[in-house]
Length: 516
Image 1: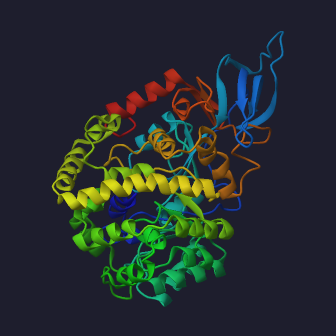
Image 2: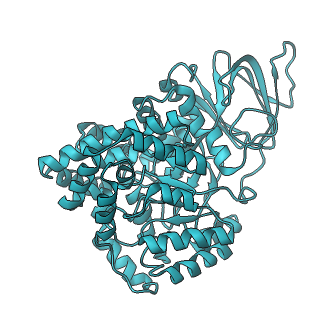
Image 3: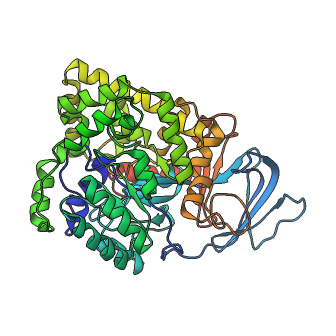
């Protein structure tokens, strides 16, 4: 999460995206959908039909075996029982006997786009069944490229769903007046939502107020010293990474008032009330690049102690009351458990053999290993707090689910500098949290469509929906593990077999993150 957008931002000529703030600056924001999907340079696909497949209803969990899904021009035309007899020669028929079809997965927190970003990361997402993603960091230039159809979004990449402009930080919004001006400018640039990374409570609430005035949702990080419930009541539309940091835990603490005051008094980055020049921002980013890999490795003992105090004074009753406010306010959550895990359990030996290492550039692997070693050298009490906090994060995700808090699946991936952030691993972590398979499937399909306001075009396998599908070897409702067994992907009506997907992945690995 943190690393993804900031590392990418520092390569950008218009670097406003993020400024140095150790732990909080980087886990960004969430948003809602534009009135219509962005322009796409994709060619039109011909007629394609999947025959004798079991269709999974993502709303009810019902299964419809023996069905044919006909697609044309990138849309689903019909879903009907497979008929016997001669095949229509104008249609490409694919026998899917024994397979299951679900809508394409949506990664609802990713950072796959940016200057000099390897297109291979987009291809890797497709090989994992991701047919759409919410870009969580942007710029005026990226928004311009989208309008002009110049983004690298082809049939070997998932669709860009929505995107912000520059992320709000002290470097582009140093006062309430400055943030109001910035929000108005981003609305004029065509941003789909406003993304909050780091600010004082006063700037945070000013940004929410101005975003409502310009008609844009505002999402991202809860700020230190901000009450989560009050943020939801004020109109903060979505919270990323369960906070991040200690913000959510303070909201669930019996010692909330004291801890909230301490958090509000915590020194944050100092910046002038005007936007810093790009070369200054790039210099700062270069100096803190390693911090962005895993802020937990560089955390201050007093901050970790405050987190431990919040955990020690946790009240399930308070947390359930907070969850009820999220439900009442319609405040979404994208837990990004895989990102939290790569921070709090960075010393897990499993990361040393993660499959993602094969597609990571050598210099990124060296940096990641160095930061991992720094994390391992933290004092044992700090490591114990982090290890405990991750387990508690799983339990919090389960509590939110049971309370009916709307949630989506995301990874905070899109940067090749940290392994372990695939959408499949997010499914694993959500399963560990105790969520049932259908709920996990919904978080990456129909819930994403609801969040975007696009249930008429995505989230279900039905006529009129986009021809973005995942074909699975086994019933995904029996086990979340079956969401990993991908037999094929249809993206905008173009079919990719399991063999095609493996060849695509091999090309990326051969190019070390680049699409060779």
